[in-house]
Length: 362
Image 1 (spheres, rainbow, N blue to C red):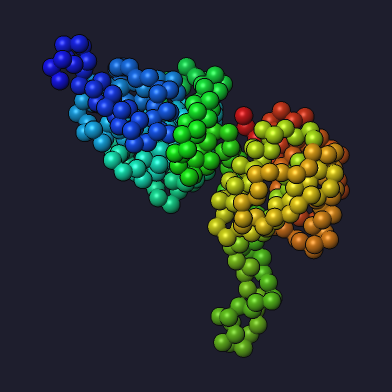
Image 2 (cartoon, rainbow, N blue to C red):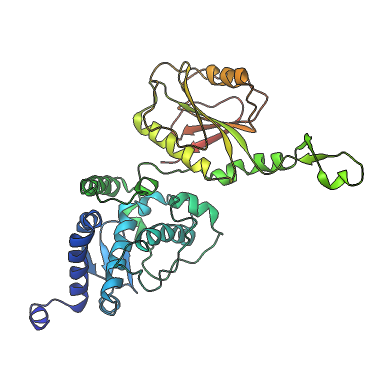
């Protein structure tokens, strides 16, 4: 201790050095990520990250226990590694986004033995911590105040584009994966594959329609006691068809984005059911929506939207809504009798003549 002070090493620096050394011995995956985030003292209340550095108040860090110092280090490293700076975009509320991101990283940290959440890190939700930050954001109320500790607010303007920081952390994650010690749910938080569509809001109108549909197959039991037969409400389930365009014009990166949207859609409505079709000039495969679609997608041919609609007609599958994820590079078919949501990249020039259009950000 005395030699450290003679060499100009502060108590806070010692805490962070011990935290990094502890990670190197116990949690190599996180240790590799931590090596990519250098720390420096700054005029901040507690600690924060701008995606490139760990900025900390030395008095705050010095007062932490070793377990809390490890938690603080991991808290900020994971914010940076999961791309929370650049993934916020330009339209999401700062406080609400920070709270969503804190639920993600705190959910990872709280499962680690020997690591404590930093003081003030009270954004914990065990029901949502395995969701992506975007999905959690949509589930939170508006106008939230930023978290009091470990938040990522403050230097967003320095990384407004985020492309360089994004590439840096993707390389860091790839390096960390080589340790073989990654958490099992990493793919939910990996920046390359996160849902960007607010599916809860997009599907809400179709869910309301289903809730108010009457069915005669199951009569209302409340009226049977009065010798009256009335139809019952169809319930809150939502039946959808999802089509993923796997034609040659769709890049592997865009296929990954489409698969992430399928996962986001699956989590949007409790009890949602349906089919997932992979299609180019023909439907190559079909899967149950309630199961994760395979990561290896077949296809790569020409594009035609008609086969997917014909497949549903042959199967007599009548969805409450169809979601078609595509680059839009094909002739649009005749309008069907059910609602259709076209999910297109923001740069796609196509403009469907009918149906709802949702543009992918980023």
